[in-house]
Length: 390
Image (cartoon, rainbow, N blue to C red; front, side, top):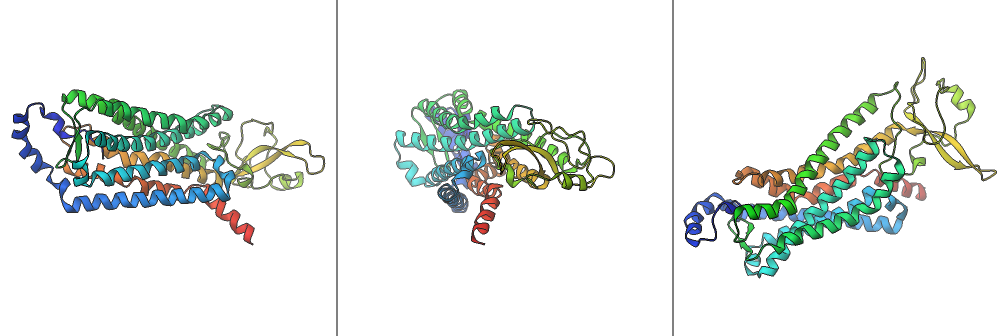
């Protein structure tokens, strides 16, 4: 874990003052060089590495066999996040090898620190983009075409920012060294300058992401809970946060007039023009409860081939479950990076806080694998393959 070392409070420009305080600092942080601690973090980093490789393997298979699903932002983000977790795990394993770190030149130490910062920022920025997409699609009335067009910029912008910010930081670290008893990087400069570099190029972005994604996830949870319970009032049009195949979420493609009449559902006030506000299907006195929303789709007539407006029923359960699973993406940085932020907001973090921050950061690949396995696209891919074989 990259952190602003408590050694930053010491005047390392004076060797005598540094040596006077070394014994106290070494005793306080001796646990980071114990075999038990190193094995625990190495195990978590190895699990994260394996988890990332599994996600990348599945993503490669999906790209080769089910390429159409790559239109979905969450799947593409999962692949890049897995790559970031893979690099982060490699950096963590390198930093856990004390002999290797002590043999590194200044350029080698700068590269390892850059790799650690780059991988964590790439993961953070990508999940931030997913939270922005959920925010725009579910919590605002921004036009669908607008936030869908933003998808193409998420990965490039995240990558550029993740490359440039750590590069700016490590360029300031002249005389960087590895402090084995702190498991941290340090370089001879005033403490306030060190904090300014690390916070402006790294920790402030993680902090903003943790706060924003926590807020988005919390508000979305309340909105989805209200939509689950809402069966009478007019609700917002169910707008997909990514390019879903609406046909998979509709209960019927083109219900006949007889079918709609037999449902005893009052649809006399529904507007079926394209782009209209969708109403909960179960509305009106004595109406039969139907788990869905009225949706207008544009389809081609089977006989004439001309485009026609078709009223369909979006399966409410499948729609909301799909959104619920996507909400899990913004929660991962909250779980894995909260301890990192807390550690670097205090000059002397407690042992428990330091262990928590390091462990959660090292295990980020495991959490992302769990969220990836809950992606709504995977059950659809499995169902599609089963249908082909039957």
